[in-house]
Image (cartoon, rainbow over all chains, first blue to last red; front, side, top):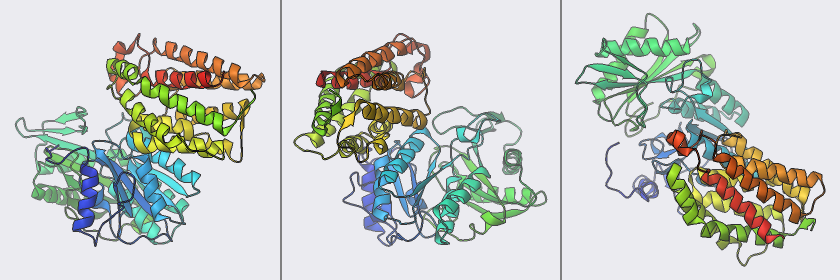
Length: 321
Length: 210
């Protein structure tokens, strides 16, 4: 991760205050909240299901960049490199006061899961309906054949937020929003591709906390090589049905040029074209989790039901989606 | 004694807070050997806040008192310890709704639900070398005391002895959860720090009601 000049003990609260101050048309803070780490959309919609996303701190633009029309209604980050707090999630849901309930979306890491699960219990004490959906799209984070719940989450989180938000805006019940989000989670997969320019190697499955790669490839150090390797790996994992379209997202890592991400996304689309129907393809900078050269490539296999909730467009400072 | 009033429960929780706060050096020392050394600090922050919230106030029901205790821990502690020890106090609340005082059976059921909630949420079980290894022993002891119609004095004495035994048991276990699992064989011979915190909680219960 790039070094910071701000204070790690207060940076999450200060960021929330800064965003609300600089972009009041997009963000609202809750100055009277206990930790001051809750960010909301300017207008609260308590008459429908609300989507609350949470993540560790310092993972920009996760999660404040995922807040807005067509995306999350509230976001909570923990302190830098710390899981989000159950109390902050609980307080955000209380403030929104949705009569239809809240879907809590997070990446499936232990601290994130524990705090979201506890927040749901705290909300149940207040008789506020709540459901959980943890992203488990990191395809090489668990051994082949392991239960999906053992996988961590990556950029697939964005698809969950977008789909859940579209469902909520369509007026679906919490039960339905949750069912469709879980269905999308089962049908998505993300591949971590890191590159060693000196030795011309491509690594797959490297973790952002220093976990070693799962495999290393010497014969595909090119845009076309990575396009083919990633498409084949993700299709092996997802086994797309003929009735499904593959939606794709290419997120560049912090040390990779934007143009490489766009060109790679286009090449994957080109390679996939004759083999399988392709839906929308997106590319940009979705997370700074990896201070490395490489990409996070996410596929979502969408049937007709999922596709109807993938139609909107969302524009942030660093990506469109 | 066969029923706990709100006032007695409040005294027990204040005693727990005092004991945890004064045990910070011990908890830090234990956690430094096989963890990241922050358990004592986090517990001290949490239970100092509990003592502050509980001192000089009165509650109408055990439900409200225990909810305030759990919510305070969750609000101020953060990290895994905040979730797990918050769950201990929150997880069994639904069994207390509408009760003005607690029988041994009520208290045993409340701790049992909290214990099960921790096992589910923390995806842990006996033998993982966690706080659960002491808690499950104390919880089962309380349930057995309730079935035998024992008094609170006897029930807490036995529950504390069971929790201490649970701490002893963790010495021969290899860590499977949390940061201490990275220490592998080095955790052998050392008690789990969270389990020690559980035994301190039951020690405080026993010292208050005897």
